[in-house]
Image 1 (cartoon, rainbow, N blue to C red):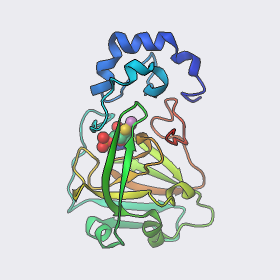
Image 2: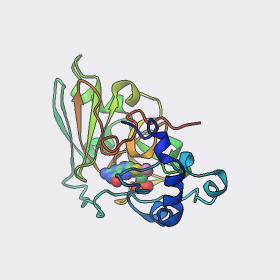
Image 3: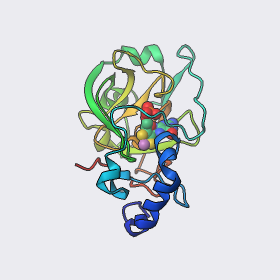
Image 4: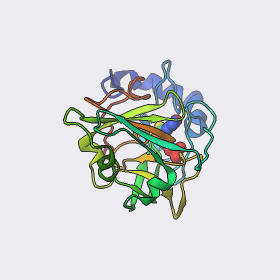
Length: 227
Ligand SMILES: Nc1nc2c(c(=O)[nH]1)N[C@H]1C(S)=C(S)[C@@H](COP(=O)(O)O)O[C@H]1N2
Ligand SMILES: [Mo]
């Protein structure tokens, strides 16, 4: 089941629910819009243009599923890369910084309708990260596990190889902050925010992609940002 497949459900009834009480949750709440089930609705699809324009653009909203931020200690933090690999590894934060540094400026889109333009990210391309562990031929996807349980998501190896996908440890010239997922988070600007797992502590190589936290709640596994 996917949110878009169920488009009729997000008709007038949904719009009224959003307008009647959902808008403040949508702006400030961790789980965005709730309509009966736990669904983070694509607001652009739900709201008529006049209301859509009222949505804030240009500012981050900090999302958690637990309502609290995982503790961050860069001196003890480890990133585990395991699963279908020749060599499972544990990287320290210093190890991560020693890998080839990639930088990019990209736009971040949440499926609920807000975006942040010109975000400057610094981090490591997945190819450089995975080269250390050497994925087996049977590995076709990455499963990202957050320190915030049970938040997980996955990308195919091909998606992770996109030129602007990375594991980011820096944002706008500073180390990634705790609310944004320190020490490291997934960045994949071509997909909606929910694929951009924060507080990543484990990357498991798996044979096929699997449903992440929001996908188990109805969102598309391939979360390509609509033009
Ligand atoms: N661990 C974790 N990662 C997460 C989320 C979350 O709730 N927990 N929310 C996702 C969603 S829906 C979005 S839009 C972005 C928001 O990133 P930000 O909190 O840095 O603004 O984080 C994504 N990664
Ligand atoms: Mo989101």
